[in-house]
Amino acid sequence: MMIKVGVYNVKRFVKWANIVFWVGLVGLFVLPLYLIDSSGEMDFEQILYVMVSKGDGANYTMFFDYLWFGLPYFIGFGLLFWVGYTLTKKQPKLSFERFGKKIEKVVTFKPTLKKAVLSALAAVLALGSFANYKLNIWGYVSERLNPGSLYETYYVDPNDVSIQFPQEKQNLIYIVLESMNTNFTSIEIDDEIVNLIPNLETLANDNINFSSSYGFGGHVHARGLTWTAASLVGQTSGVPLQIPITSEPTSFGMNGEYLPGLTTLGEILQGNGYSNYFFMGSNADFAGRRQYFETHGNYEIYDLSYMKEIGYIPEDYNVFWGMEDSKMFDYAKDRILEIASNDEPFNITMLTVDSHFMDGYTDASCKTEYSVDYANAFACSDSMVREFVTWIQNQDFYKDTTVILVGDHNSMNNDFMQRTTSDQYAIYNAFLNVNREVDETRIKNRDYTVMDLFPTTLSALGATIEGDVLGLGVNLFSKEETLLERLGTDLLDEELAKKSYYYENHFFKEREPARTGTH
Image 1 (cartoon, rainbow, N blue to C red):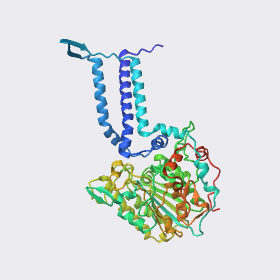
Image 2: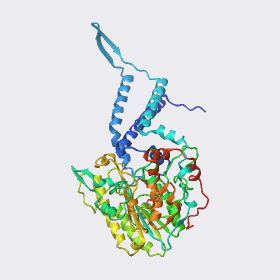
Image 3: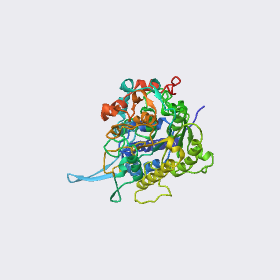
Image 4: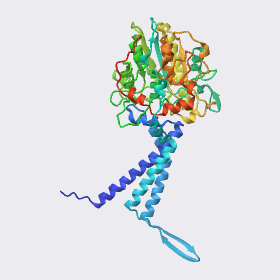
């Protein structure tokens, strides 16, 4: 059977395919520019992680910001294409004089398949080189092809050491604060140096604040820990997120699993009689968070989907990333009272979202004191978190509860971060009502990462850890040096970036039943 395809239809298809190809290429050219402009330095594995994990529940504001940022580039390239089209179709004449003689020349350009293919290949190579220059893609590939021995040397499997809990177990309320930097105590807004987080600073100074300086401070970034999902894994398991270069399917929530061979805080607490809960105002399916917490400690998830399901908010409700923090805190208060009335220890983990970049969300209950939206969002979050912590402290269960507040990563709004008076960024933390003796000499001037919060959290609950090391993390209450203190920033980042056979063979594969109870 012969299928006749008109010449017109073929030309039309080629024309539109050509347009789609070049528009897509321009879009890919603009992407690294946008990421660097908006977020400053960004690990390539963060971009790769988004590609291989579930994207349900994402906030698409960034997509529109990207289109707005790229508009001048699309217009500029569009003009170039228009000039090229004019040269091929109109064949304009150029007139000029040479040695007193007038010369007219017709400008012609005859497109051929060979020229089109060569042009496309040249454009792809140029784009690849540019993206590599901006995002260090080849550096990432090279690191992943270069095996390291960090885990074989330093990793401590929680199942291989004794973790002893006190007879009377301490409850845990663990609040992860989106993009919360200590630098926001001194930042230039409206031509003044202001403190956007006075309440959080007071909470930290009045309690325990692990700091990389002698004053109020926090921890620093490390490779594979610089975005929310990676930070959540790091602070609950003591390892970063690695995205292996492999033909094997990875497990970041796509198949119902998430690092199935990893033993985490949730499993250790569950094995010691705790019930685990996770509260967030966004969709837990985004970036595989539901799979991580459900499969590592059997957390009950209270997210945007759940709130709609029970009628707490309407089905079509959508504020910022889904539901604002004020509603999450209000619901959590009622649910926490119910949980606390049960005769068993609990771990309540919460994730705020109002201070997410680019510009955050300022709750209607807060004043807008500044002309910068993001500044108002942080100031508002500071007030709401302080109010929520005060509520916790006024409850009967507080005497048996440790409260930990910790930022997940540096803010990714590069322009906003450059307003701070210090270029040494530190990520927030405060430990309240810890169930142990504290050596004040081990609190300040510490170099550590989010991975060290894993054993430190258990220690804050009164647990005794054999060797004071879990995963790659070190108990900050102990006398042990952290991996960052031992290796330094450059060497630690270099080792974390390398391919790890241990990581791939142990964490991506199902483990034997973990001995996570007291032993």
